[in-house]
Length: 559
Picture 1 (cartoon, rainbow, N blue to C red):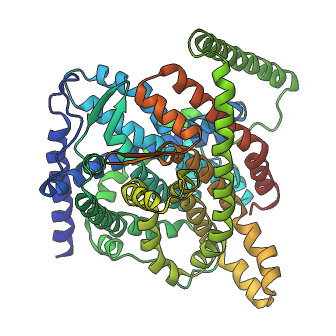
Picture 2: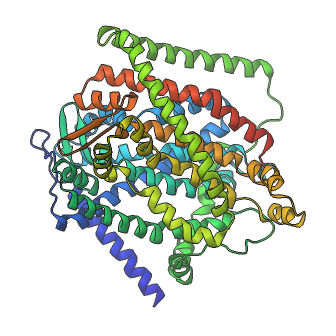
Picture 3: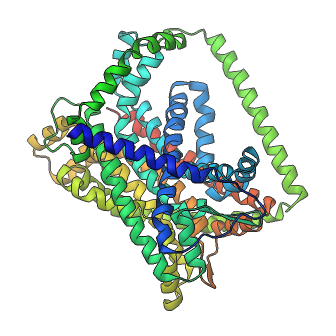
């Protein structure tokens, strides 16, 4: 009976995906493409399914990107010097900046088909999911326990074997938790990725984000509230059927001597474990493991040579440095020339001041979120029973697109006379603060039971318990949460500093509003200046503050 339920569920899932795929490849004409979607409530289930398909497609891309990019950054010394700053810049580039560049290319890649526009939307969601997951997996690799590192070398594992048997299992818990958080980030940008407005052209893809955008433009508050209800059902369903089983499954990769007394559980995972189908699939595909291991052995063993010639090392560093320097100089000179010939450098000074205003909002947001969510995250992470109850609530709050609330917030701001300069901080926080909470929960839940039991046996006073156990244990996770929260806040400023409802539009002073207005107008020069200045602020903050905290976490608090 259980096998039948699993088979029917899998067949139903495949059928739904195939049906939705037909809608993805319908003919598309750029000149006659609709700029809005129908706000008929009967269309909402179909729109929700299409949005869900895009979200999971972007998540799959994000996982592949994370595994490749984070591993390269953690294992290749020279590549790390380039990949991490590039990741900082990619994280800081707002989603609208990606859209303005990529949408034309994707449409040209699939002429006459809506698949190009779908790819642009998926890519935009991908850019709101991938960076947080990559940072989390990178952090798990560089803070890997020394015992595992030495064991993989002593066992002479190949790089391929080490990746799948040590690196991926070791980073599975933070990867799953940050994947869940990033999925929520993708929901936040759903409106921007489905109701596209680029280069004075507007496109709308069938989806719940575009539905809310159309209902908001028509001032149909009832339809917006209906979409909010559907979104809550959607988020809870995804949590129950996907994320909850995944977090419970990831517990098998926890490394500690004593077993957790309250391990997370999932009815869906229990159902799959009791079914014989996964085991049969495993046996059917298991014979492929050994041939793939042998084929991938060409990448070499997972160990570094004991001695490297200093001369060769130095020459390699110099050649690599010159190549990177030439690429950076070429890119900067091209950008400087373009700005000089278009907007002029006087514009850069003004944008820097606007960036300072948004920078102040980001700092305030991160500080308040830290004070509020670190104790809450530790409390949830250390109590599996509480975590089981709180996780769906936190997931709903984190995944809920704040854009859906903008019409309500706009009404409150107009009625109370509160400026969006302050109200924008709240809107930014709705999308960014959860990174800190989720990472702290993940960090607290990963504290080995051995240490917790030792602290309990020693009867440490509360303050000492925080100083000697909790704060050092969650420090690396908090840094990951802080850096991604700050990046998320910068991105959220794009949609939080300009809000509209019907004919009412509120605008805050800041860099986010500047980029949003430039993107809507299709002004490439101003988009470039805004994106470059935002990247400058984010990378500068990361280099001068967050990276130093990362170094402290690796040097003093890795297990």
